[in-house]
Image (cartoon, rainbow, N blue to C red; front, side):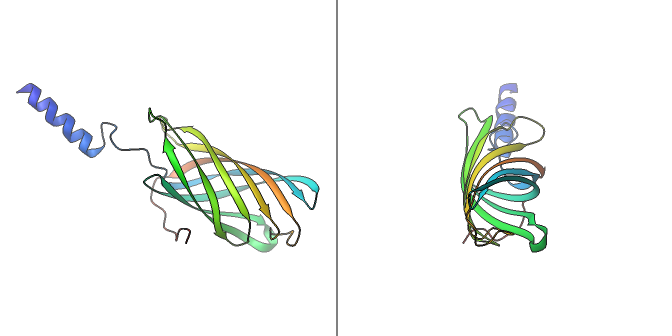
Length: 166
């Protein structure tokens, strides 16, 4: 009788995700900072900005909406990204990539998301990017090539609402 109760409780816990049966989710809102080394028409510089991103995960696909003030004269820049994430075989780390698809100015960007641990009370991640544009705010018409680093921490696990990449 006790064995049947233990089996039933274990099955119920697994069905509700309490026994680790539910995969980690990236869904939520994140605050953080990006720092970039930049070449603008061959002239080196660097800069950094705070920003906010929203992520919605569906299976192994993630959609991201980003917003930051890159050039105060031009207001808030926005961008949409799509990519994929994967858990490690043990389930204690996650990693992936994102590609820019559309936003407030044309550019190409590929993002590598470094492995991040899923076992802490809070979740955050780091990433490296390669960015290319001739339409960047404040320097439109000039060739801009950047290498950026992101540091993000999740501030909400609520599912954000935004229209993903077309």
